[in-house]
Length: 260
Image (cartoon, rainbow, N blue to C red):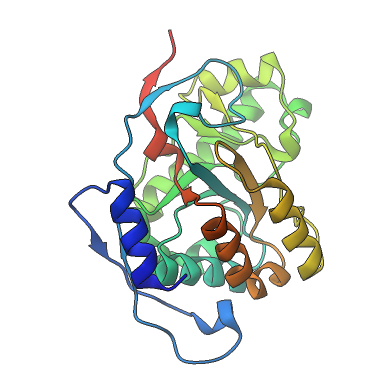
């Protein structure tokens, strides 16, 4: 779907009035060739936000409608971070990045990412500083990993990433959750469907997983680590369009209020 058609679709679903013009950067890394297209106007869906439910977050509430949260982790490859960011700027796709601040990609791409963060099109969340298995750390170590990453995101991007944290490898337990909650990270955020690309995976395999998992209410996990996904962005976008899905960030769906 072209950018004009996507804007019309989003408008029909009900958008906030304050659309922000975002800069499209490094688009050739997302498409492989050709000039960068004009950026689109990206605005958030006008949803009735709800408190985050208790426990680990794995899906969106049914009342959110035909929406899907596309979340992307890590950031080991700066070119992939650039390509994802350019894809978002070009298409209006809304993403939640779960950042490991230890990777240089987050400094190298900060100028391109920051306007999208400021507009709300990209949300930044906490994936720890260096991606350890949190269940192997003591409470102080868990908090140090999250706090260092929290401070980095505040310093470089001006955001407070609380309350969402994604435990590396999806590994957490009651002790990890309690230690994280003590410093404001009260929502361990997992997923319901994966693009399977934490390691390198072929383009068709990524498409097949998107066909399997892209659906309303899903929190999908992808990774900013290997470039095959960057060559199939048009197909992934078309799957969303064919299924009438609109992407959302977690902040689009949930309020900062916690479940009692």
